[in-house]
Amino acid sequence: MKKSSNVKALMINIFTFIILILAIYLAYQFYQSNNFNGFVRSEANLGVSEFKRDKEVKYNDTRSYKIISNEFNDAMFSKEIEVEKNTPYKVTCMIKTKGVEADKNTSSIGAQISISNTVERSVAVSGDNEWQEVELIFNSKNRDIVDIAFRLGGTEGYAKGVAWFSDFKIEKGQIEEDSDWNFACFIFKNTNVTVDNKQIDIQVTNTDIDDIKNTIKRFENSCTQLSNGKMTANCDIYEIQVPITSLSYDNEFGYYVAPEDIETQIKDIINQNSYDHIFAIVRLGNEEYEDDIEIKDWIGLGAMDYYGVGFSNIRLPNSTKSYIYKYDTRVNQFPEEVFLHEFLHSLERTAKEYGYTVPALHDYEKYGYENAYLIGQRQWYTDYMNQEIYTSNGYVGLPNEIYTLKPAKRSDFEYSYALDVYTEPQNIIEEIKGIFENLFTNIELMIAKI
Image (tube, rainbow, N blue to C red; front, side, top):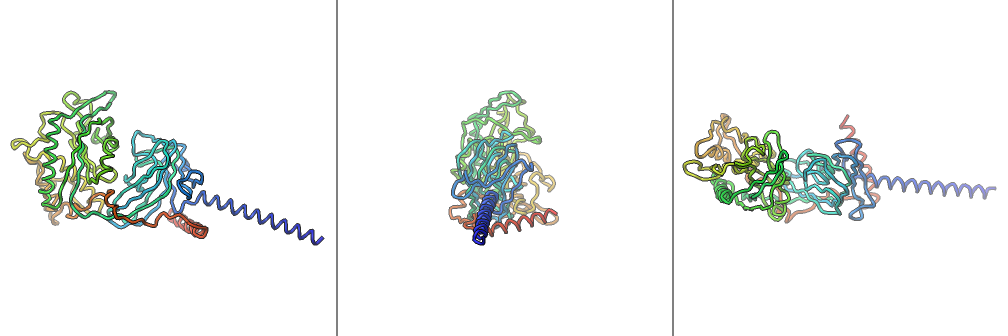
């Protein structure tokens, strides 16, 4: 009887042990499927998207990070990281997508890397794609913390489908401290768009191109002269035959060319070079189609960016008789003014992002300047670029160091080094440690929301 009891007890112990091992195994599998290694999960529409660690579809031995959005949403994994001010950083990851589509016709929505609560982002991947590397290059500017997000969606709209993310890396680069600026000037020779169900075909003439090339040369010289040698400008000119086929619209400005409208035509050139600013030179009307494209009184638009690089529109006038971009001692001695004005808008924005207080570029009359005959606002720009605008509290304008605060680009990472930010747990001890760290992080977030 005693032997039978011992056998029974042994069987119960073995069964209990098996149940315990099974429970631990299932708990561990659940933990691995739901361990996001310190990433915060968020979505615009709560409960729409599903976040998982996927062991079946992965780039390497580590489970991938998976976002499933069966309905349109903006969902992301994100993690705050510490950065040094005014320093270039590059974030890379591998992305795979299935059935990703955007709710708007724009290339800025899809699976991407971005900085939360900003417009800074990588390219957005849509459709069905195998694993590919995606990168986000940015300058920390005046920030010491940034929230890096791996995202299915975007700042301009929502996406649906499935996206997998893997192999997160971040590198710190070396800032360029010179004041030599490189400009890419794209002259689009054809605009072929449909506006209000009307097909419009507009061409740039050879005379236009000659005038613009002369004006760009003057812009190079004026950057050096008006800044009193604080910067130099080198402009590369590209004549683009592939037509513009889409335009963006703004309630204040009407139609214009956004970076997304011409990304196909310029991306290879930009990726192969290190440019600090981009001019897109376009014609959106002429005498024949003067009333067909709604333009609300702008000849140039600035303060935009193409993946962190300053981006400006320069619009050719509808009339071929215009002297806006033609030098003439009797009519216009400052034809490069529009180029300079739009570039200064980018410097104005950069100065504010670095924490400087600068006058608004359009407020020249407020400080006693005028739009003078023949030379426009040349004196205003000169004083603006040299911090020589007089006020009762002293002189104001762009700070001298603004000319070295150029956008981050690939050339900044020739001698970079990786940061230990996204390391995955390498063993069970590190995973257990991660569990408690995630637990404390979630408790802190809950307390912060109370």
